[in-house]
Image (cartoon, rainbow, N blue to C red; front, side, top):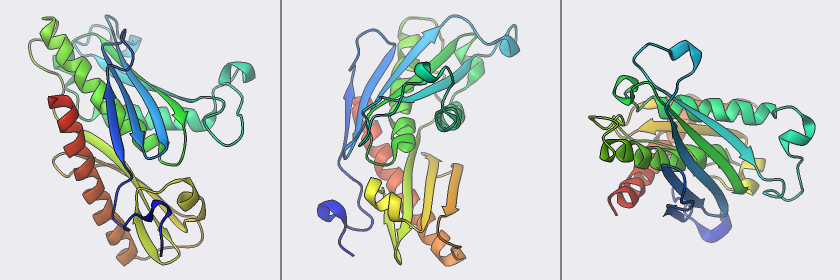
Length: 239
């Protein structure tokens, strides 16, 4: 099948990280995954949630929101509804879980790092782009804590990234854009560390079931995509 943008079935969209996009946070990155653009800011605060108080450990959490005209039609801001969008709550919990998996909370000490992920433009894969860009912002903030003498060792213990995969028609595809995602009969998000370990796999048969063979193809594509993303993350962090 011919993909939008003439990509191969196992090819990522173009990816770009813009470091220090905002000057005030301890870590700031704008990530572009094709036409999906997410601003990821990491903020460090010298406090922890009540359940972590006097534990000697810190906490990493996330918030996720989509600008009103990030999509084809305008959506209301959460504040205008006086209620957090259920989808946003689910996604920010996913981002927080993913990022905490590569943080040594004891080395972080009793402080909180909040990753704010704001979708500027959405064309599929906003949650996976938020995790991938959010990690870069988190890693910048972690190094800054060491540079400032607030942490003796960098609390970041590994890398994490996420990518979408799916089956459109009979073809397994990597990194779906919105049009591919909306017509996929299987949709999956795969979150992995740089040690090729899975953190979370979210997969759904949108139009019926899928086979073990198809699942294996999607996992292989997800691993390939995550390894490519982590290579790009390393380059921006070392640059």
